[in-house]
Length: 434
Image 1: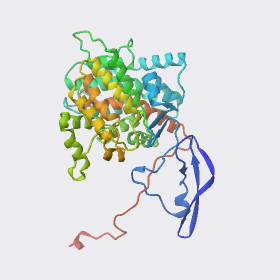
Image 2 (image 1 turned 120 degrees about the vertical axis):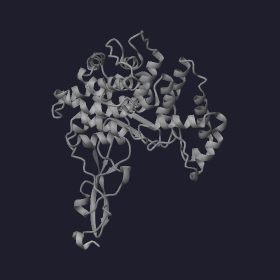
Image 3 (image 1 turned 90 degrees about the horizontal axis):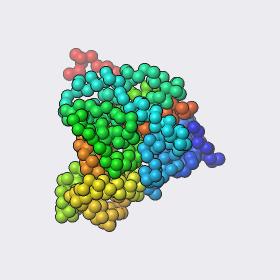
Image 4 (image 1 turned 60 degrees about the horizontal axis):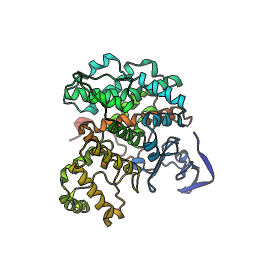
């Protein structure tokens, strides 16, 4: 998956030695300097904590322009996909590079539907967890155990097994997530239904009970489908990079996805929408917003606005615009449009977008600002928010993992370091240490 090389090279002179490094260009976005031979030519590594200026791979899947607020999946703008497509079609697009034909779409939907059930023995795994275990801890453990049940799709060198593994992960993650939720509240597991679409099926597995019929609200189902689309992939973020790094060692796909789940659990990554909701609850009412705005501007206060700004986006998060509209649709449908937290959110957004301090720093609302309040209105507890993120992001992880496996340039990940520890020294026997 090599990118094109420009005619000129970048040059670095160090200790009298000049190293020439090829400059590579992608389809869109900034060029990159290929430093693969830097150590050989100069004896030096680069130093880039957090890899914020380092491209660790080439990819055809997702493109982000944070300055312009652009997010593309295989070239298609995220807002168009969220409004005109559905989650399984986006899954097909991310995995295969093109939107499906009618026949391909039908076959893919059927393949995912046939894989939604999990091995019956896996139900016993859940009883090994405490009832009050965090659902992400349960999901991480269960996903990691999948390789013990599905040996026929762990050979990463077999394209057909990779395809089956991808379908299984996309299909089974909602089932596992719903089972984790049901176990946490002491309700019986609800089996998947093949007559429902992907998100409707997930809702019924979460909220149906055996003693009465459950009817899926189509507006809520469509909103959740949009939320899944908006979270499906986001380029080389922390959890995706974790999946790629784990996969570079040749680990099976289920183990790699479990690694992604573990990384996503971090509050700076998948837990951001939970943090934003907690902040809105802390503010409580519109009249208290000015005092919190003042605190956010005061670096010594220790308070910062959650759900504003983004590591990548230096403009309005394109997903946030879709999420704002979706939030209103859900609250109106459920008759909770007077939700106090929504009033706080709307007024906080208005002030932040007009306030010189936030405008200058480009602290625009991101997707987490509205997704937490939307999910809560749907009936999901805060502890399940990150699990829902994992359900959506699984296809992105799988697509990135699959691309990495098929990339002839890929090697096992091995970051370098700047060592700042003790210099070489001799061992001192115990009786001479004072």
